[in-house]
Figure 1 (tube, chains in turn purple, red):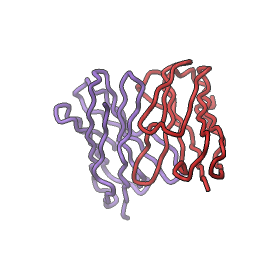
Figure 2 (tube, chains in turn blue, yellow):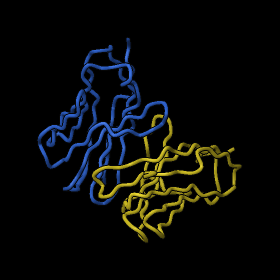
Figure 3 (cartoon, each protein chain N blue to C red):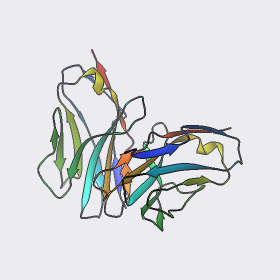
Length: 113
Length: 111
């Protein structure tokens, strides 16, 4: 069975500061991908970053980076130089070749000016 | 290129009514999925498909039916709507499970 867990319902960060959102996962699939999605109030699901679970190198996309710890099954998202537009719900998710994309419960990020 | 199209965007049903939420994609994606989103619970997988003619249950399948007769379409059927099915529903598709495209969602209210 696949599980994805986000234990932080809400997080807050000051504008221009750095924040880390936590996520843990569990799966028996060998070919596995991990994702962070952003959902603003518009409800649109926006892919922030993707990590291939068999690659140890951490993915980076501009101000967004991940800390992928395979042994600990941890996949945290770091947002640097936080901006007001980063305020949203963030979801961690994982998918393997069975086609099941499973989500965590979500973390609401507030950015304070 | 329209991506993933969900219809309708909003719907109000009476308890016991039936309806079909439509999902279509024009990207020739094999993988398609349906989710419901409820406050504090993230997106939960209802049903998914890895190709035409192949469907399987997700985390919360009860009360929902699906079929996949073509690669492009993956409709979700509520046979007898219940207030517990009030939610926002998302459809997603993927070429190969390495990246997913989402529809804009359907807000369903069952009264």
